[in-house]
Image (tube, rainbow, N blue to C red):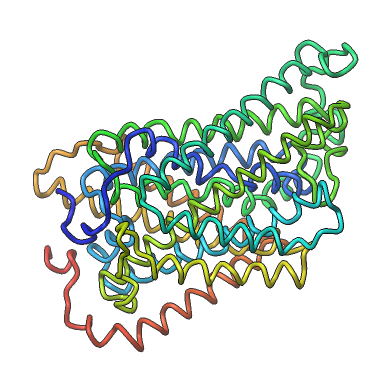
Length: 465
């Protein structure tokens, strides 16, 4: 199956190195550096278990998505696949839910940027930095996509260097006692302060939404395929490596952080535990640099968020599921109206930050988790349908999913379990209510605006019946 001509107006100029790092850049944001504080407060060292479980889920989802994307690299990605295999209603809902995910995610990142600026200026209004950042990366997304790729490439390298530097620093504390008055720390901090699961499995369950949100956005890699210069070469490599890199950075840095310092001393409200470790080690200059790099991480994730959300909105408009003006592109071959519309929705986050700067991050972060889980479940269902169709047609896949259909089915079961965990926890239940609310809005819009046109159009499954 080759790439569709649909969505071909976009410029295919993202190179292999852009594709490799864009997925890393989009995922590694304040969800790791800043949101870890709230997650550690709720689960203690048990958060490591949550990250491992989420890493397994992500690996299955990305391998499934990789199989489909390598065969059919288009900007609409899983939204277009859902339209093809599950019908227009599901295609529209999938795209709409993923757009909602990125809007909510960027809102939370904007809120975090404001709180991080307060590291230096405690009384500075938290909503102003977020608004300025939104304006800057909206402009960035209106440039030639290759320029966007270069900017994100630099941001991603900075983020990777930040995590590696932190891991080296922590490992030295743990193994040699450097930065800790010569006292070797070891691994005892993982269980010496209330046990490895100080809040039991309830604590692990309560942070599932925060951890899932930290991994979410990795599927943007598939959306980038629509503007990849050589998708058949760059995508298999990207899908093979990105999940393991992300899991290594996430699990590795969290493990080192919790081993290097008692978890119950890293809970200052509004501060990143990654920064607090340097402050407690008596190296405020490094803490300042770390804070700056975390802000860059947030900017990068927001930048990727505008990119991913605007492209899915553009794709939905191309499929006539959204207003036609959203398909308009500028001289740089960028869907500029889709970009403006996405940025306008994200700007609501600055209003919420203004009204409630202390709680906005956790609220909006939880709100995006349901949309992310919904999208991942759809991706796995689509892979089962896609693979079944390919095998019946005798098509030899370029990047087949191993252990099929066991792995995608296992992934669906784990995702349903994660969704149940989010519903179970009173702290994160809001994510389900907000997600279902948005789902209802999408269904009503579809029924009123789109259903009359699609009622007599058969799905791929019906065609093959």
